[in-house]
Image (cartoon, rainbow, N blue to C red; front, side, top):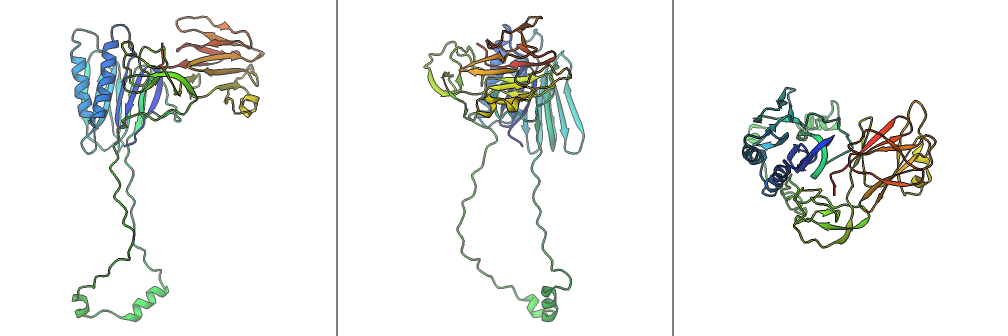
Length: 380
């Protein structure tokens, strides 16, 4: 099975550890302990090389302990047996399993309870989603960790085995002529066992070690070095963070020692056309962003936006990453840049050449109509 998932845009949490997947609604003051327990269960089952059946059992126990409360929207899945898939959905979350033969199995979608099932494979693909999930961005991949999103999609097809056919000599070839000239072997020759021929001496290659599909640790970040802290599972975080952005564990009771390390991506920009842009580098936004001097100098990556009104300037705005902070700067555009903070309805126009910090959930309007939303699970 493929070891990564493609997150779907949304306001929940998406977690992946090797072949185990989890999607759940974002925590609030009431559900924060449950969400922390779900993320811990995923990590502990993965660390123990457990399968989907073990994960479903852990999650079912956590949900059953909340009797009398409204079911929390979540979905988990993982391999079971040779080709099966264990799935659990709760609340208004849903699961869609496509079998290799073309059949489809759907679970959930009703906010009233919990449903679990082991789907017998072979399984071709899996989708876990909350009710508000958007479309998947094919460039995004999540192998290990927790990100903000509304669901995930995974391909579970196993690679086909290569078949080797014997090469037969072409008709009229020299090889066929030699066979005809040699004549048919006698009965004694057929009965006589073929002599053993020792293979030519070659270097003996050691057998490859088995590789687990469950990644014990996330990939190392390659961003600029910034001052941060580790949670108890050694995930690098913003020193101001209350919860680990990777495993979700609380950092409030830890004694933290700041040090400089490579900065991980700070979130994503969700464009109004459904695309998601990872924030691991500054983004230069404009109608011909690829020709901006910041892009030519390697200081920013181009984010090309156009509209029918031609209101987006050639070099319009810069989404800038400074330490752990994400900000937007209007670069003196003709039609301006505006920001709508989360929880508000009105856009406020930005003064040119002034950096304004973006909070997770903030929407930025470029020109008259193009927008994108900044999302990140690295809340402080």
